[in-house]
Length: 289
Image 1 (cartoon, rainbow, N blue to C red):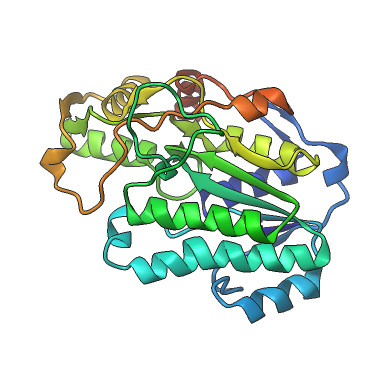
Image 2 (cartoon, rainbow, N blue to C red):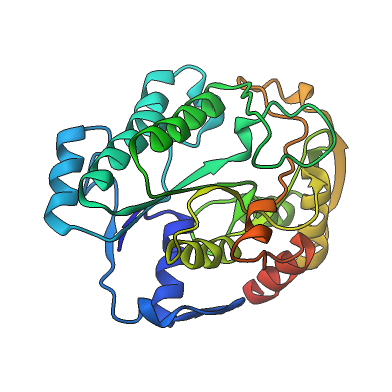
């Protein structure tokens, strides 16, 4: 196995593998004797094809899990070439290298590949139509993976938070303690996702041959305002939260107004054990206190 990230998801997968278990269950025994290679951006530049091929040929992993990406959505609008290299060319290079040695590739993607129109959760067969550079480069990355690797899992997720690194939950908790009042957008809806739940399903998937595109998010949907309100409530922080519009923030990149995903492919293959977003969030915050 080869992990390509030192971010919150990569660290979560690393933790589950070390402990051989997660809050959702134990990890398959096949992982107990596997060697994990933990790779960060300082170890490998995935935008360089020759470097990727040489690296993959050197270690010959049976599974490659690509977790990292260029995720600064607003900066992507101006630094689009860097976003293209990391989010599109990087996955292409990994797909080509994995195909050469017969390795499986798990590629993490996003709800931002959809335009956000409608009010019914997007299924895996719905046609993507991104409205931002970030979404466009992530979608192209998906396409490159599909074109260049025969053993792939494309896993789309959303609103991810976990124990490691920066995320919305930690940001809201910190701001709530410092300010006592928060204004949060109430016109974008999606699925908060606990990184431990996502990591567990990625590991389950990677041991199968159930290749394809998957949605993997927390069950249920809410707005960012709802999400922030629950974070403050569960944290028992004295803070008021008020709704605001996305337009008032004047961000460079347009966000999808509705990007809720339906985990249909999980249900049809390995099973959907993702927790309700409120349940997973409360347990997560209880552990932080």
